[in-house]
Length: 188
Image (cartoon, rainbow, N blue to C red; front, side):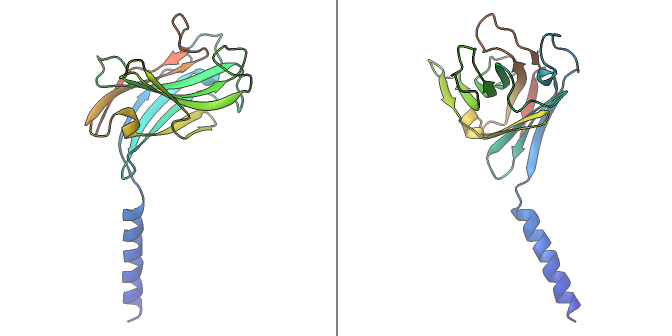
């Protein structure tokens, strides 16, 4: 008789644990060809895949860009990984979430090399720039960011378009993008 209550208690514990663990629900993934960047760019800017996943119960989007090789702990100069978010694939970006390594001699960088995040809200005039707006992690060949759906104006949206890019120079007119993915859509 003792076995039956123990089995029931174990099953209840597993069910409670499964329900309490935040789950990932909706995802959108895009692939990008290997080696489609300029020979002058470092291989760790060559995007091979990108993904956005909504973490259910947390109102957080997990953003990920994967590259051909590991990203150094302290890259040289300026390096950036961007996620462009828009209402549809035919509209311009409304938000840009960026993880970047910033080191002199680039004018946009201070004298102390550092990793930082930037959230650019292009729906305001002038655009709103927020530094260190979300947590991130660089893990080998992968850049990961965790951004609140409300930070991207997506709290109630059923769908949105997105794409990614890597850069070796600040985003100013005339500076090229090292690599980019095609636009993709995300639906809840």
